[in-house]
Amino acid sequence: MTISAHPLAWPEGWKRTLSAFRVEATFGKARDYNSRGKVALSIADGVHRVMRELDRMGLGRDDVVISTNLRTRLDGLPRGDQRAPDDPGAAVYWQESTGERRCIAIDQYTSVEDNLAAIAATLDAMRAIERHGGAAILARAFTGFTALPAPAATREWWDVLGVPRTCTREELKQAYRALASRCHPDKPGGSHSLMAELNAAQEQGLKERFT
Image 1 (cartoon, rainbow, N blue to C red):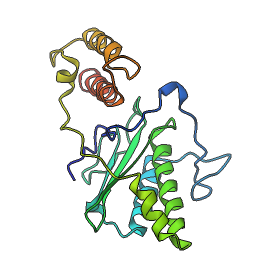
Image 2 (spheres, helix red, strand yellow; image 1 turned 180 degrees about the vertical axis):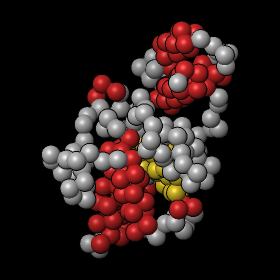
Image 3 (tube, rainbow, N blue to C red; image 1 turned 90 degrees about the vertical axis):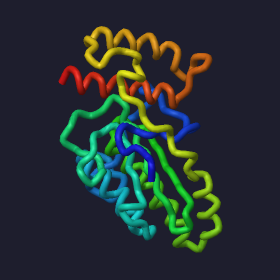
Image 4 (cartoon, helix red, strand yellow; image 1 turned 45 degrees about the vertical axis):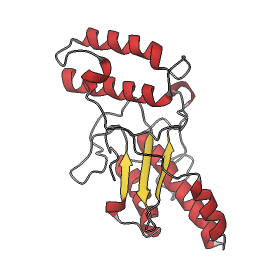
């Protein structure tokens, strides 16, 4: 697949959750998916849950892309040894044996690992439909997760922000604020995808230049 594992490749046209409306999840290690009084999940836990569900669907590693704002390991999966990104969204893309491309993306929780766990829980729930004899219902349900064309190739952060690669922190921040006022989906001409690209560019620039 030509989907970016990093930064987050949010599917075009999918609504984003504004940061002020994200909530703490109840996913934990005590049970497979939900647990009050939880022991917090790790990134590795979230990735494992997603891959386990996709494996149960007969999908191999090469058929799957897990896309987040976390830098990836050599195998292309998210690394856990890094600061939590400002945008905790996660999107999972896969290709079925029929050639159909699917996607589930969730950003309603405050951490990447919980959004990954939510994707795994969604996959598990949808497979339960099939286990109870609802194969046709499952096929119709998955139609809603058909992946749209892959996002355009990601631009370098300085190109997105319109600043020199050697810019100062203040120049970077000023460029971000000016563009955010135009790219926000609530503004005319703005969109969730433009804002996601801008957020990812700011995060990448701050990491590369000032950490």
